[in-house]
Length: 115
Image 1 (cartoon, rainbow, N blue to C red):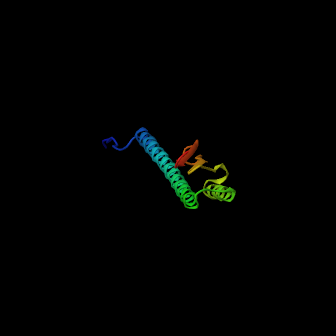
Image 2: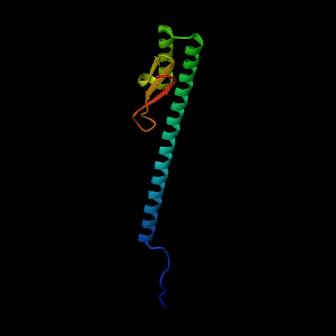
């Protein structure tokens, strides 16, 4: 009987393919994480804009603000941003700041109107 040589995939080739597949999956997971962070950051910015715009309209229509307005504004900001959220009324303008830990870290701020 004549011996025939087996043809197929060598163990090294299978291991290299597994490593490349694992690297590709890790890259996809990293992209997914960045996407979720960006989405969360955009959501926080949208919420801040809604709250700030609402309070700016409230101050404009009342031709000023008092302590209750400031306390209510602070409660609204803390409702979406948590304990790191701060809302400040200045003249005819409003400023909202919050910690953006889930969206990539750092402190974010939004200012509307006259500072």
